[in-house]
Length: 293
Image (cartoon, rainbow, N blue to C red):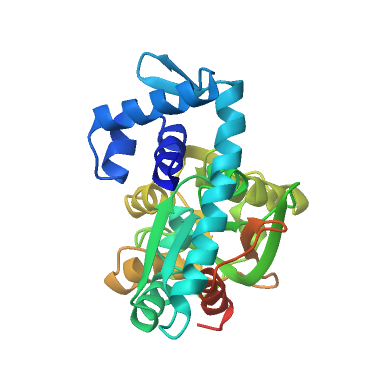
C-alpha cells in the first residue's frame, strides 16, 4: 500500500466524489475506483457507501480516513523538514477561511508569503465558518481563519487583530451625509443582515439586544458581497468590517459611517488542531498573519 493510495482515499471522503478525487490526483476516475477496491480488499471491509451522487464513508471507512489523514500529515511534515534542509522553506500549506476574511484581510499576506516562499504550494479554500472548523478537526486543512472564534474540543485558537465594524448605506440614504452615527439611531431602520446562524449575525443580534435596538430586517444573505450589493441599491443599512468596503467607498457606491460613543469589533482567530505538529511552511504563514499589516 502506497502513500498515494491513502491520499486518494482521503480525497474521495473529503470531496464525496470519485471524479473530484481523480482531478486532485491527476489520474482517471477508474484508477480512483480501483484504488478504493484494493483498500477494501486489503482490509476486508466496505469503506464507502455509494448512494446516488453522494459518497459517504462506512464506520470502517471513517476509521481508515482518520488514520490515513494522520499518516499523510506526518508524512508531509517530515518530508517538508527534509526538503527544507539547506533549501529554504518548501511544502504545502492548506488554509480555509470565510469569504469576508480571505478576500479583504489576507490579500497582502498571501502576496507576501508567495513572494518570500516561492517553493511552497499555498491552497486557499473559502467556506462557511462551520465547515472551516470541520475541516480543521478532520485534518483536511492545516489551519483555518474565522471571525468570532469559539473554543472547541481538539481546536487551538491563535488570536489575530480584530476588525473595526462600521455602518454602511447607499449614497441616497438619509444617513449618507452624516460624519458619525449613534448605534441607537438604527432602531426601526431597514437592515440588510447575514443569515441566522452565521457568527456575524449572532454577534450583531447580541449588540442590538444589549442596546435595546430593534432593526427591521428586510433581507438576509450568507455572504458579505451580496449584502453590499443590496445596500448599494438602497435596500437598507448594514454593519460590516471596515476593510471589506474600501473599494466601494472609493468608487462612491457606498458610504461608510463610524459609530459615536461606541466602537464595535469583529474578533478574528487562527484555528489549528490541538497537539498537532506544524510544518515550517505552516509556521511561517501563521507568523505573517500575526504581523501588523
